[in-house]
Length: 480
Image (cartoon, rainbow, N blue to C red):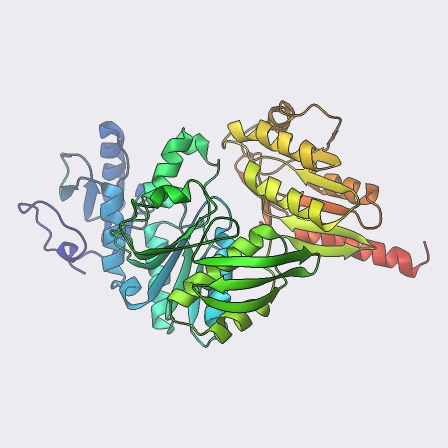
């Protein structure tokens, strides 16, 4: 493909030559590639571009004038890279309806609800997000919640070629700020909520909020679905550039739920979705999943699905992996959930409190090299809503486990347990629990690894719980 068909640059640039691929890593650049350098430092950009050319790149793109052959300067190299990837993969996203879901919590579940309703109505659907990429019976891992543009647009191309009509994808704040979604026009954008997370990257909560809200512009989306019960989402009222509808439980909304009842088997409520009333019975547990359900139903209503398609699609939906998944181990309810922010942890614990009059246990940790300010807040939330707390590892990365745990403990005043080995921590809490108690294992959800000192070590909460479940049944069969 000719380089001039991939990027826009100054008129005096020679772009009339063939390139074989687009790349963003100077070390892996190959013969015929065009390399995009994201560095904001002149010296670093020069060294990276020089390395890419020595590895075979026929052109380099950066934000600087560099004394290199076929060096092209652009205003924003990340944005140019995203647009180039879109063009290289034949603008595949333009041929499908794209639904983007953003928010601190609820992105994965809301995305899967939308995809499930669409699929059950006969649509061919692809999903991109935290739990991976799924389409046409295929499933594979996704490097990031919202992947970089090269991975993303190749995935769009593969989806289009396989006949996918709708793509439901999670849109992270990092992806918005880093221009990974440039060039994509979303048919509908959803905002679930905005609470504290990722301040290690955004530095201030205001910047994080601003980034999330910037997604709701004509540049990115055609229509919006907003949570009326979230104060930060409601900052868009009067400022949203596109038509929107709202959903909620407490604030006046276009879509809302009444007569909500939740137990360990799921949730039941009546939903009024933009004046269409339906009886909902879903195995998704907890009030926050009622919110996610309302969001999903509202999106699909806006896409033109019938009321029957909406209710049947949600009522028969399977649980989302890593989101309040319940296992009954000899009368003890063990819950695995991805909750890893103060707000999401509180939602899960409050849900558990409302589901039992027995004890609530929790096992959790915090990720290393990430937002440190939320650690003490999560400690406060845990001891406020749980009867027993065990602090453990959750992707310590390059930090010392004991330092992360100490940060969590700085927000705690009550006695608690510490067991850095996550498997042992889970065993300890389950062994302490009694009939009817709920043991929450929070933070990792469906993740299949622990990140420790730059290594990803195989680990999965589901595998640990399954092992305990089997051992318990084996002991019962032996009469122990």
